[in-house]
Image 1 (cartoon, protein in one colour):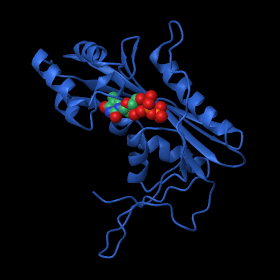
Image 2 (cartoon, protein in one colour):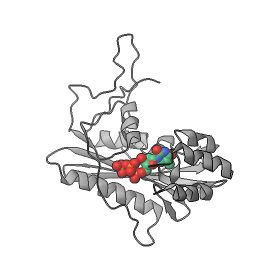
Image 3 (cartoon, protein in one colour):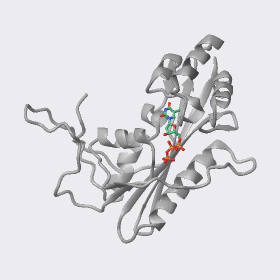
Image 4 (cartoon, helix red, strand yellow):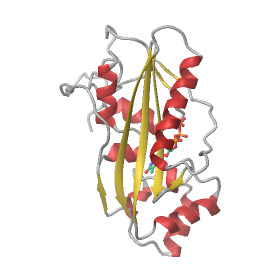
Length: 227
Ligand SMILES: Cc1cn([C@H]2C[C@H](O)[C@@H](COP(=O)(O)OP(=O)(O)OP(=O)(O)O)O2)c(=O)[nH]c1=O
C-alpha cells in the first residue's frame, strides 16, 4: 500500500570465495557524499543490505511532538522533512542528506516510540487483535532540492493475552520502536499478515529509498551482504 510517485531500477550483487562480505560504496563511485540523518541502527542496516553505506551518520535533534490534531500521514512526512533539514543545515555544499520517520497509526491516533513500559503496554493492548497502519515518511535533500516519499503498510496483530504482552515487555524490545514493537524481532510472532512493504515497517522502505537516491544522483551498488 504505497503512496506518491518515483524514478528508476538496477542490477544484482555477486557471490564469490574471496568476496569481502562488508557492504560499501565502491571506491570510485560517482556522486555526492551521503549523510544518513538518523540514529536508527535499523535504517543503517537496511541501507547496507542494498550496498549503500553512508559517508556519515548524523542524527537529527528535533522536537517530535505532534501538532494539535495532526494526523499520522502528514506527521510522518513533516518529521522526515524536518530531520533532513536540520541535518542539512549543519552541512555545506553538495552533500545528500537522507532522513525518515516511522509511526504506527491506530485510526487517527499516532503511536510513536513509547516513553515507558506503561505506555508500551497501552500501545500493545490497543494493537492486539486489530489492523493498524505503519507509515514512514522519507526525505532526501541535496543542493537545495528536496525529494520526499510516504509509504504505508497495513499490519495485522493477533490477539495478545496479558501474559504475552508482559513477556514481550520484559524483553525490552519495545524500546525505541514506534508502536512499541519490532516486526523484525520477537514482535514477528504477533503479526500473522501484512499488506505492503516489509522494510517500511522496519523503518525505511527500500524500493522507494533506492529510487529516490538514484534520482538524486546517489549511486546504489546492490553490493550488500547476500543472505
Ligand atoms: C513498527 C516498527 C518500528 N521500528 C522502529 C523504526 C524506527 O527506528 C523507530 C521509529 O522511530 P523514528 O522516530 O522513526 O526513528 P528513530 O528515533 O529510531 O531514529 P531517527 O529519528 O534518528 O531516524 O521504530 C522497528 O524497528 N520495527 C518495527 O516493527
